[in-house]
Image (cartoon, rainbow, N blue to C red; front, side, top):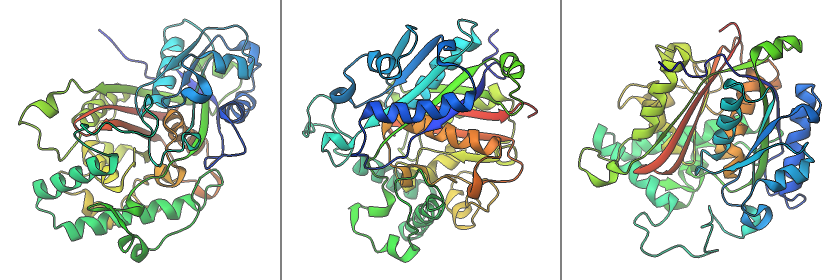
Length: 400
């Protein structure tokens, strides 16, 4: 019987570059920025690393198609290095590879690093990796905003929520993230925005306005993992343990049958259920301290609250407007600003989310610090609501 990797892997060091329009740095400089912070935080020598995973989804110009640039840039000690890509879950996929290697006993210290230089592509949104600036005209969803606008419409219809009320809840989601991002020196966007400004912003894809959409950024994040026993031997009493790391990938049935109405994300629900079982979480609304979810659009964050089992069906909008997910609420969401304020350099986002949980669990998040953080959850969603990959990870202290 499988038991998962709960409490078998400890994160002993993490690093994160400043996110933004990083015209001052290439992919190599961003990797080095995140790696050197992680290595210094871990307190080990680079030569002790035994394997590494590089996550990058849309950076063939700067990185090519292998993991060699990671080894060369960081002068890693001739160890196996693997490149991974899994849509918007790419950063967490890199962490999964490193964590599984340590849990299996294949290595004592492993590195996971995610990086993306999207601004260099010259594309206004997420680029099509093989065709430069041109999307296929036959793509059924047309654009990412158009796809997730359909999620908003389906959610509104399923639960009988007036679209005006849903827009106000979505505006609160964006307002909250901008308030949080203003306190984070590594965020791309650091300016609070009023609810009125959000509601009056130009429409991108009804009902998603400008501030309902996350931006495009450059960035990198890294983690160094080992076993809890080795971490203890290094004196790492504040090591953060991986309690669960689960992935669910669509088999296409959502788009092919009538059972799914487009108002929720099947794979988020499946990944969350597996993660809760692995982590021993019975009531996420009571057990979780913090969450970072894939807020590519404000409605995605709102719907995810129900997919994660935190809000009841049709109740997420009410929880959002009640401040349940605000920085001072019961379970803060995107306390670092989220994708909304960091942007979404695909390979880095999942590890950037883990970085915030790592800091919070160690009490090192400065102005953003929440009291008594026991469990933190991160969630990535890649692709479209009808055909996607979803990843849910749970992190906790050794005594949790």
